[in-house]
Amino acid sequence: MKISKIVLAVLAMCAIVACNPDNGDGGNSGGNTETWSDSGSHVGDWALTEWNGTTDLSLGVYLSLNEDNTFVLYQHFSDVLWEKYEGTYTLSGNTLSGVYSDGVKWADYTIKYNNGEKKQIKLTRKSDAEDVSIYTATDIPAEVVDNATAPAAVRSTERKRFL
Image (cartoon, rainbow, N blue to C red; front, side, top):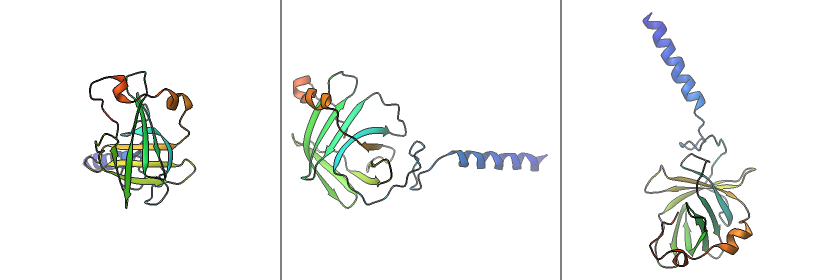
């Protein structure tokens, strides 16, 4: 009887491990089995498509990383309005860092690339490995670009920034 319980426990553990998709780099990316690498291109327009393992997002984030090391971040949380932040970024090895135009620094992120059919970048916050954002290459909708406002124009209080 004890042996059958042990066998059942081992089989249950094997089933759990087999059902837990892993992208091969030690982190689960919500079922995405694409291969992430240290080489690729970060330049372009990106939409946040997964955050901390979920694709059911109640927020919108678009990020434009330009060749001249400038960025534009469009975001909206619970507000209907899109906010626009600008600044500069640096890429040193696989560390992506940035500074908003008002001098506020982002967190440092490790960047990985998925150069497969669905071109993506994965940003993992260096100070919190559980904070993982996956961005998919996209065109930023004209209505977002045209209607986004600087945060100071939205409210006078300090606004939370996604990066």
